[in-house]
Image 1 (cartoon, protein in one colour):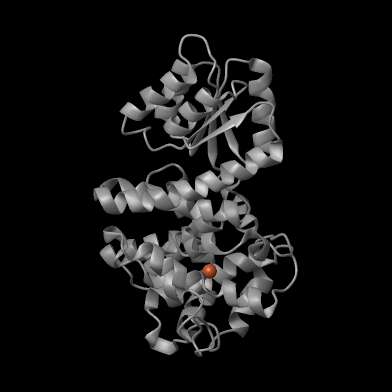
Image 2 (tube, rainbow, N blue to C red):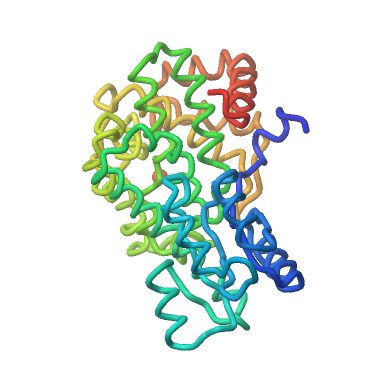
Length: 348
Ligand SMILES: [Fe+2]
């Protein structure tokens, strides 16, 4: 692996644990999920599934009901006992589609799907459950005040947005690394930096409320669609403001589309009225977007992207930050590669 070249192309996929004793079925579902863009952890019986759920912390579990040793309902009851696995959303996937089993499944898990299933419908249901689970998790944190546990989840929330907004895969992690390095170089430290990093990871969480056909539209948005899209920073604030741990992390989700000259949205802030962390973030956000392939465009060469950033100095971006970014680009890029590696191996 070459971290320098992989930096702009890598993505982290949501992990699905599939527990089924039928090896043909396990193979078929796993292949289908990989094709749909998920990382799959297979398990051929209940106890193995429980062990892998504890160790690998999947984002969702697909659980067969009729298995030897432990059936799916017993597995789910065991998962519910452990604080490490009780909140992992679970979908029962089984041929036993009668009323009693369906009700049992819906009482214990998030969904109950009968075999044979339609691959596209299963994928769509998984995506919907993952989105709901993340929003539910936010509210659970607020209720339980288990704030110490929440920090690890920010990256995953960002990735949930990426599932919804197919074109942005990997953007959250990359942009957070670029932001961290540039912000540190420009003097952000301690709690200010940590709060801003949380905001960076959650910057587009409001997009969960924007319909997929607008987010992933290959052509330009019409007036109505653009109006809806422009709501995502406001929605982000509504979603995050009640969470105690995020009280000082709202600036980036709220203002990351504001421009230095006041032409941005949603509040048309200008100049120094835009917090420093946001001015830094909006530059790296755009830089990453320019360099990344999206459904409607190819990725731009870095030198061209830097020229575009320079062009927008004083209009979109704070000129002082643009100057620093351009004059120190190689050092920043090296720092980002190191940061990315540290974060990927969990050392940060
Ligand atoms: Fe955004």
